[in-house]
Length: 152
Image (cartoon, rainbow, N blue to C red; front, side, top):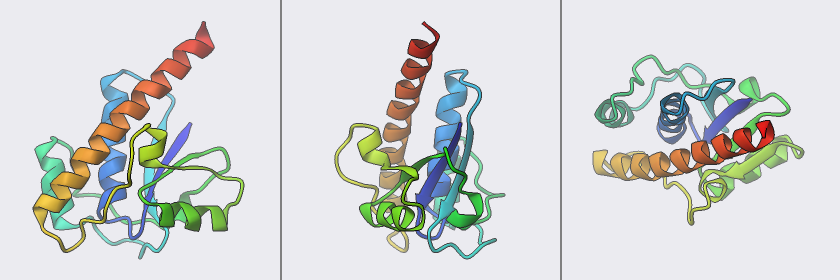
């Protein structure tokens, strides 16, 4: 299953969500998932923001090699699309009305959305990362439970 994390420029939230989700699946020894990220208005090839790299270092995850991708370049029908805000979700649904797209927090059974930390300092990135981390772990648990139920 392909999981696509979506934000605006694919330089802050969605790259952090990508590596955090990949780590959550790996820690549960879950295979068969391809995790990527993209932006609805990404400038292809842009690196992750320095603050995102710094905060992911604190999680022992590396964003140094990340390069921004546009959502339309990575979307495939059947992908699970997890968006950071309702505006991203609307953009995805406008492009692909039948996409299996959700708000990250709602899919994780949490309230709110993931605020944009861009230009707000490293503490904002830490808050966003903590919210994303909590959400992706809940989602990994949910996927693990669904996988176990389908094998039973």
